Amino acid sequence: MTTKPNKLKRLFFALQMDSVCQQKILAYQQQCQDLIPLAKATSISNLHLTLHFMGLADEAYTECLHAAAATVLSPSITGSLDITGYFKKPKIAWLGCKQAPQSLINLHQQLAVALQNCGYYDQHEVFVPHVTLFRKFNSTYLSLPMPVLESISFTANRFVLMESISTDVGVQYQPIQSYTLK
Image (cartoon, rainbow, N blue to C red):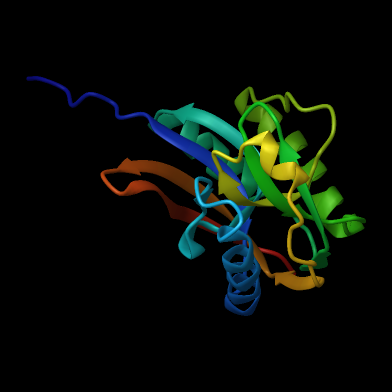
């Protein structure tokens, strides 16, 4: 009898943006696209705010992550995307929060503590809540006059364990499990 190889999945926890928020992000993204044509825009279906990146996970680790996340109790989150930013090493332009809602910070921290039961330790010193707008964003674009960003409100009533799947048309993010915020 042969056993099936255990497929590894690339996982992360995130807040998915509601459809109204997604449309507003998309409108801003499209305003920027003409100025930075070589940057790769994040597709509307992939817009999310990352809470924790888990990396490669086998079935047992995935089950542990799910069980740990299910223990997190947090209220729904309301906030605003009202600043732009840039991460140099991954060449990512993003939208973020000038002042992250305390409920978002608390969710991030509670989830990190719960995930320690699975051997996860957050490697980032500071949590920078953000939604990726563009990849392959060259630092020379920073000198360009970008459109004015009007604050984009969001509400999250759940967070999601997502899988990052490489396809012929690029990376797609697939929800695996969602967790209600009350």
